[in-house]
Amino acid sequence: MTTVSHITTHVLDAVQGFPAPGVPVQLFAQEGEQWQVIAEAVTDADGRAKQLGPEALPAGTYRLRFDTGAYFAERGIPTFYPEALLTFVIDDARHYHVPLLLSPFAYSTYRGS
Image (cartoon, helix red, strand yellow):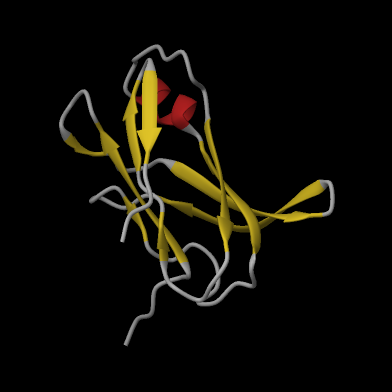
């Protein structure tokens, strides 16, 4: 049985209307004033990263970094945002799904389930 990490993400290309495969993603944990990389992944064919760090994380502040520049460069599309940084707080043991809706000149996110 495959388990998913405490934090997962799903990247959707809002211009194409499809999942965004091949987006490099890093998960950071805040330790004092520093950010430490704790996991790295690349979105799969469905634009998902289900194995992004451990099954459980302590309460704290975390950050996802999406290499949107690499994603658009591979497609020959100029972009205003070479990366998207999403910082959020984990305060309990529930699963955290942090999706990204992406276009070359905008992005948005929400607390998924």
